[in-house]
Structure formats: structure tokens, C-alpha cells
Length: 52
Image (cartoon, rainbow, N blue to C red; front, side, top):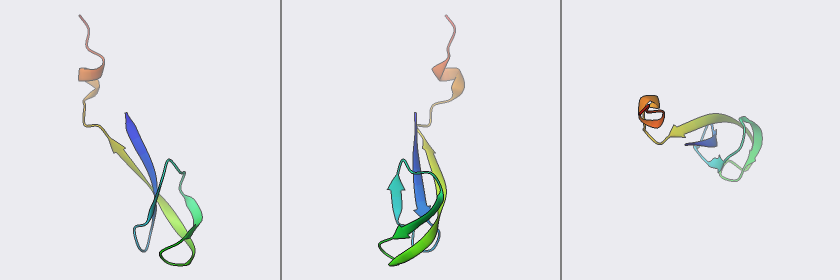
């Protein structure tokens, strides 16, 4: 399970589940470049796909 965010390059404002690109940033009050931030739950692939 992972979460995706688009984060403003200058101020850090973020949108959940958005692709990176140019969006209007309410904190900067203008269109800014948003970068991709992807967060994971911390489990390792071997823990997810264990064989019995």
C-alpha cells in the first residue's frame, strides 16, 4: 500500500493522489511546479508475498 502526493516545490503544499505537474498553489497564490512524493507502509516485499 502506498500513498501518492503532489507537493509544491517552493512551499510544500500537497494534493493527495495527484500526478506531478503544474497546478495552482493556494499558499503561493500562483501556478507552481508540483513534484511527486510516494509513501509506503514500510512492509518488505518478502513479508507481503510469503510462501507457506
